[in-house]
Amino acid sequence: MKNMFKTTILLASLTGLLVLIGNMAAGTGGMIIAFIFALIMNFGSYWYSDKIVLKMYGAKEASPADSPNLHRIVSDLAMKGGIPKPKVYIVESGMPNAFATGRDPQHAAVAVTTGILNILSYEEIEGVLAHELAHVKNRDTLISAVAATIAGVITMLASWARWAAIFGGFGGRDEDDGNNIIGFIFMAILAPLAATLIQLAISRSREYVADAEGAKMCRKPWALADALEKLEYGNSHYRPSINDVQARENTAHMFIVNPLKGGTIQSLFSTHPATDERIRRLRAMQF
Image 1: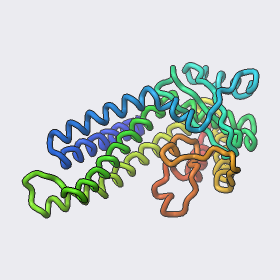
Image 2: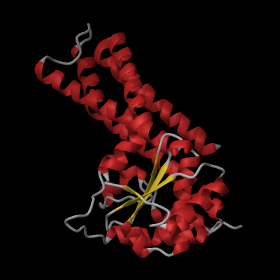
Image 3: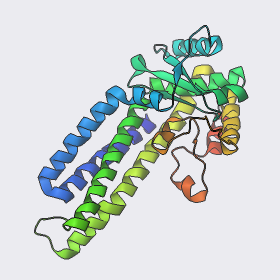
């Protein structure tokens, strides 16, 4: 409940930031246009985000005959979680990872890479898929898509503001130059940064919830902890082959561990909480 309240506040903050930028860019009219544009983008995200992501990664639906263990695990976990069984997909990539997508539990899919199947045991895969089904059950897939869409619109508006400043000056209302400069700096630089930080906070918060919910679902928190440990190591040492599908920055938040490697600075903008902390919390769970 606490995490859902936090997520609601963060989503409201994103929406408020979007409306504020629209108002700063073009007054009330701009505010209304920004809000309408966000609604259109969210509508598209709601209906088509799952298809877009699965196609982006070349995911192929796995049949029960070809992947009986995956289907057995997903069926059992879906029954325990009280949700319909999602479709099961496999991504041909040595990158060890997994993700869930879909607008609701009735239209959900889980995808695993061939890389994750090669390094995890049956019970560890069970822990990973329990985490992903927890995202489905909690509708985190939709929440993440909405947050990413709003943040994307804010970034786009900021880009428009920069071009407007280059070709015609910022604003257009009767404001003094000082306010124009402050407004431009906020919209062009600070607003996209704030939107990104809020989006990342939403993503990190939902990861902790999915870890806890997934551990309860499979009743093997140690299996998920062991899987996270292997996946963190596997992704940090992963060297892609020429045919491997690569993770993209705009979908990194969907994966169970951050597929993008980076140093200290990039870790500040990570889509995921620290894996060590996630493992610590899981190992502390008792059933």
